[in-house]
Structure formats: structure tokens, C-alpha cells
Amino acid sequence: MDAVPGRVPPDETAPARTSADNTGIKSPQQHLPELPRQDSHQHRQHQHHQPHQQGWDMTDNAHSTLPGAIQRKSRPEERSKDRSGRSDDEGDRPRSRTSSDKLVVHLIIGFRDICVFTLVLPLGTLFVCFVSAYVFQPEEIHETHCRVYNIIPSISAITGVSPQRYLWRVSIALHIGPRFIIAFVYRNWYRAMADSLNDPGRLTKACRMINVVYWLNLIEISALCGVTYISNKENYPLHEKVFIIFMTTSLSYMLATLKLLKILQPDGPQTPNEEASLRYKQAFFALSIASTIGLILFFLKHRFLCQDLAFSWFALCEYIVASANMGFHCTTMLDFSTEHFLIAKNAKQYKKQHTSLGWKLD
Image 1: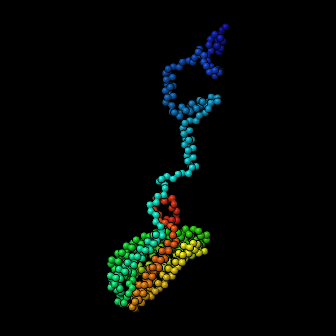
Image 2: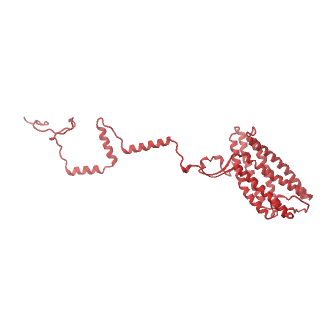
Image 3: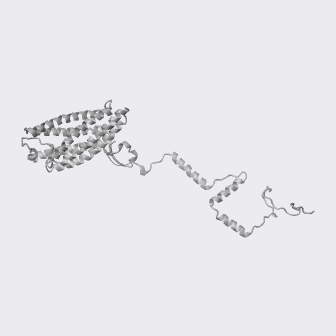
């Protein structure tokens, strides 16, 4: 029989068709046409130089075309999803505090102890200066411009002679530092109390009074420093003016503090310590007013009339004023009986906006 075009003769072997072959086993007689060696070499070289990612994608695509094949994700996608999954898990879990974020306390002192030190230091030094000057230098400390009889020297007299002046100046230098810290702490404490006020008008008035009290306290401390380091024997006119500033700001500070507490506590003190502190503040302020009036009267008698013992009464009133001033400031022990002075590392996370130690006037 003649061969018909497009058909295979029966005695000839037909090429193997992989798509129709269900077994997938080729006959020994089935073979593919052989490719040229140069082309196969170039094909292998091209596959060798292909990127790793592309190789995985080609394999995945090839498997995906097979029926019933399991599709696999590429390795970079698995790694990225694993990382994202771990980051999500870490975000859900609370972050553990490392050693660099822990609070490390270097120094902690009770604020009450600081206040006791602030009181005892000038009071003890004043007593030592009085006794030593009265025993060893009576002529120098009793000398006045009127040349009248005198038995009690003034504070300026016992702290203006040597070596008592150096001891007094050192004690005031150590005393000034804690006083500034106490002024900052009081300002922040008053601000915290003002935050609980619901009346806007009362809140505005309280904020103004807080600034007034704060700056009066700073001026008083600075005037105390000036009175200490400007001796009456070195520069009496300037010493007298600075002393007047100290007395004026001291009394004004006490009065402004009492008025501020009345604004911040419209219902009165809430704790026994606050009640005792307010009572002592009022008593020391009244004592300071009475002593200041006596101090002015006896100073005028001594200055213009040169009466005997007028300067001694003036000096006695001066000691009472100084003691009342110290007592008023030492009510801090009742206001901050449980607080501590802390120096620590990594304490910035506990810092609030209203606890800054700035000099800015809000």
C-alpha cells in the first residue's frame, strides 16, 4: 500500500507522544532527535548563570502546572514572613527592660534630713559665734557709734569679727545650696496642688501667687547671702540696705505663702501634718511681725536718741526675727516628711513637665 501523506506506515515506528502516553515509559525504539553539542552547552551555561531566585520561580511554576501538585513558596518569601511574624509576636509581648534602662540609684537622702541640716547648721554656727565672741572679744562686739552701755551684741557684730566671720560665711555657703533646692521643690509642690483645683479663676490666681512666692523666696536667699558676705564693718551703708531687703522679702514671703495656702486649700488642711505646718507658719509669721516692729523702734531709739540698752533690745529682736525665719522655713519637715532627695541614672522616664528646675517665669 502506498504511503499516504500525513500517515505513518504500519511497518514503521511512530514517534513517541508523551502527552498521549499514560504510562510515561518510553519504548526502546522511541528516541528524540539529538541536539547539537554547542547548543546544549550554551543552554547549560545559561542555566548556570541564572539568579537563584529565578531558578526557584521556574521550578515552582513548573510544579504548579502539574495537576494535583503541591505549590511551594519561595525561600525569600518564607524568610520575610517568618521575620514579620516574629516581629508581630514581639510587638504583642511586653518589651523586657534591659539593664541599660533600669533605674540605678546613686544617692538617696530623706528630705526631712536635708531640712534638719539646713536648720542646725546656721543655728549652731550662730551659737558658737555668739559664745566665742562674747567671751574672747567683748570690746569689739559691744562697740557702737553712740558709745552707750550694751550687753547683747547684734548678729552683725558677732559675725563681723575674725575668725567668727569665716566660720559664719562657710556655714551660710553650705546653707544656701539646700535652700535653693527647697525653693524649687516648693514651687513644684504648689503646682501639683493647683492642678486639683476645678475653679479656673482660683487656678489662675494660684499660679500667679506661686510665681510670687517662688521669686520672693529666691530674693530672700540672695539677700541673706549678701548680708553675710558684706560685713557692716567693711561697708555699712550697703550692708544696711541689703539687710532691709532681706527683712522685707522675708516677711513678704511668709505672708504670700499663707495667702497661697489659703487659695490652694479652700476647705482647710487635709492631713495632720498640713494642719500642724499651717499652724506653725502662722505662729512664726506673727512672731516675726512683732519682733520686726520692736526691732525698728529700738533701732530708731539707738540711732537718734542713743538710749542705754536700746541696741541690746534691738539685738534681742534681731535674734528672735532670725529664729522665727528659720522656724518658718523648717516647716518643710512637716510638708515633706516622707519625700526623699534622689540622684539616679535613667530617671528621665519618671520626669514630668511640671518638675523641671527652670528659671522661666510662666
